[in-house]
Image (cartoon, rainbow, N blue to C red; front, side):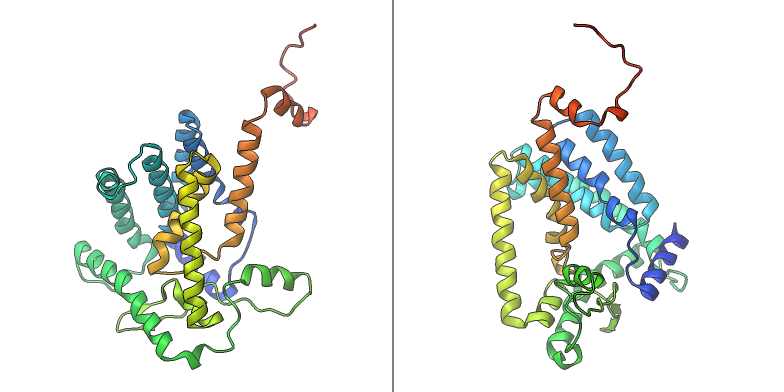
Length: 296
């Protein structure tokens, strides 16, 4: 797992993000977990959850675990009417403990610890402090040295610009998939959610964009509480970018949210149709011909 993780990071550093079918299909097990949980289909939920957990373990990453854990916890709390802070913490403390354990264990597959002479506890403590403090320090450097970040390719709309460039409409070189490290005095390559909005549009626009994001997140929350299954599903998936605001910007993952929305719409639309109608939508060649044919 450690070798696979290192090879993947090295490939991204050298070639940028290499998109394949798995790039787009990777999040779908998580989509399925949340859809089945929102729809209260327990057997399907546990099956999809097992598949998603296996996928994340083999991927040797922590982000997938956090997406899954935050979304599942969100749906559970809202469906159980436990949104208030104290009630939510009584439940969330155990998933949080599970995630913290996985987070610490995966440090030894995701990080180079060959030069570390400290204990596991000290290494985990130092890493946690660096994760929490590091982004603020690096973003402070960006704010005080804006001239070093001028004329960089737009990061916020890179998905759309890359698509336009692929059709030859514009010339656009996407930014590196992994950001540059700064030493503050420890190395860090995360700059909070504000960095790219600040670089792309300026400080005033960055604050305005965050106000729009906050307003949209609040609307989704209200929709999720109004018994909207699709609203609850999408709101649960926004927990990850909300948690990640102190590290990085994940609100710009437009492709992922578009795929999630399409998946949710198709799922709930098919679920609202009578079984016979859904069966007719399936091409005849996929029907099970071993079933007996009954006469009228």
